[in-house]
Image (tube, helix red, strand yellow):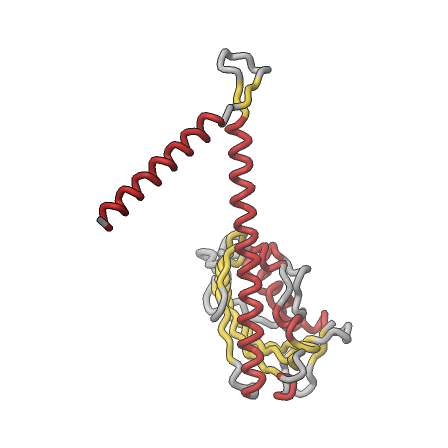
Length: 256
């Protein structure tokens, strides 16, 4: 799953080496989470440490559908230089890296708790663009600073922001990154819009069903009636007809 680089203390992900699982555990086990509790008070929760470890593993292994969603709050807020969204369900979607790069790999340079609730993970993504033209520019090297704000009680991520640096890549690779990433974000935003429209439509349908059928006004709980919408349709048509007449009159006054 993962492999350790011999010449440094960085950890690189790979899809061929099955030994890396223990190495990724060793990396996060070596983290200093500070003193969560002293003899007077607890500054944070052990759940924060557990979440930090899981987030590091998700990054190292480039997890997609099997990402640990429990690490995120239901209404987590995500932000990067191009895209923002709310809701942990969106973390189930495919990653940009696995779709845009050949054999992407990850190395982690730094992982530290900036405070009792803020985690920073600095890591580098490397891979060759799948587009043969942009691949002429060599590997894309993306340096990422992921910052997570964690709920100190539940340990869940409530805010996630990423900062990107592609300055170590060639101009061609940089162009590929921004073009493909913007396209990816546009597609994901389109999915968000479709899902939101479905939710709204579903809500209207449910509300209409509740309004269309109502109990017997005489008090018999076993009898229900369906409301006749004919009167409301007639009222809407009359209102529309009057509005058209009004606008025509106003137009004639302006032109005469």
